[in-house]
Image (cartoon, rainbow, N blue to C red; front, side, top):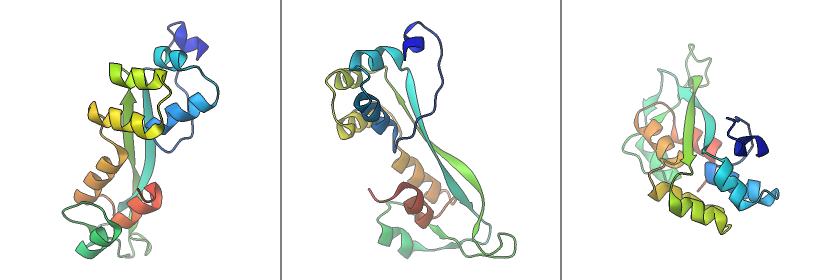
Amino acid sequence: MQASLTGHLLLSTFHAGSAAETVGRLLDMGIEPYVLRSGLLAILNQRLLRRLCCCAQADEDTAARLGLPVRRALLAQGCDACRGTGYQGRFLLVEMLTLSRSELSQAILSRSDTATIEKLALQSGMTGRWQRACRAVDDGLTSPAEVRRVLGFC
């Protein structure tokens, strides 16, 4: 954080459930809120989801049962090409929280909880991990079960 305050670009990894949760974890580590506000430009949260194989079939019931608000869903089936798993490869699911909004900066300074920070970030235009995951299911990239496996229940 000291290097970032001197104007240097610093890239680092950190384990957290979401971009907003990263702020809370850094505050819990003892980093002062004014340092976070001044030293952070953005937080990028990323998850890898398995990509459906071409053998996937339409399944409307699974999405509704798992509570995902999607128009259509595909279910992993399994074939020789995917060795029976229903998936081939992975793709990146990302959310990026930028700290340029004054409401978000003020929430960090006042040590707001993770839910408040995430709510403000979504209001300021951040596309959250759940929105991106639902879009990936709608686009046929992955299954609702894979989203629940990686992101859990909300």
